[in-house]
Length: 306
Image 1 (tube, rainbow, N blue to C red):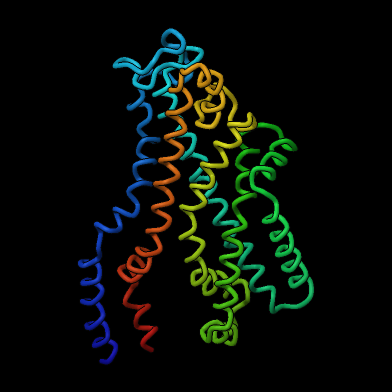
Image 2: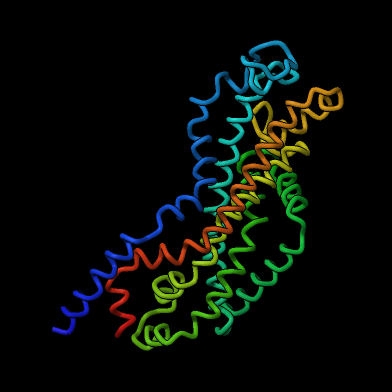
């Protein structure tokens, strides 16, 4: 009878939370990311020309036919800038997902190993020290070293950028695990006979991933910056693939002659993309608790009441 009464009270509240959830604010927080992703997905429809083929004379100024002009080999700068968003989004999403997933797993292992003994404790401590050493290395230098060792390819770029950006989710998750591991429900699960591995995946990780998940847009933005930086110095995506950093670098000589469009437009897109992602990364922490509250199930609330 009491269970029925609790459900009757909680269900209307859950529906009301979903009804009154500020979807406008949530959409505004994610709007810059949505726009960037849409430009990348719709690039073949937006770009009027093939981004890797010569379509006109070289170094044409912006006009009604070529909105951003043409570059030193006659390729349409607007089409290349738009397709450059596809490269940035592809790397950004892949790096954000991989770095966050790896960071959560490694951070959880390090956090739980700090109250263990034997091999697990030694391995956790070693991983923590290695992470501290990697943090001390500048991101660009670390990425250049990894690409230099593995050779220039999309896979080596991906590994290099993930290695430089995985440290933040590791540290964020470790701090949350150190807090969560002392909770009473985790001790009750262990006393109930659950293994440490099951307790980690069922109880520790779900309650420790919040900071790392909210950090994903920041990883996305940093990935765009690192990818453009590597392309600028010539160790990024291979030419003639349209990539913003490489476009900026290849247009520097023309910039000195007053032909600014090949360099300025991709630089502006890098700036706007990173600015929009930074806005989302600052707004998402304000929206995240409301999303969690709106979609929390009555069963979870019932457990909290119990």
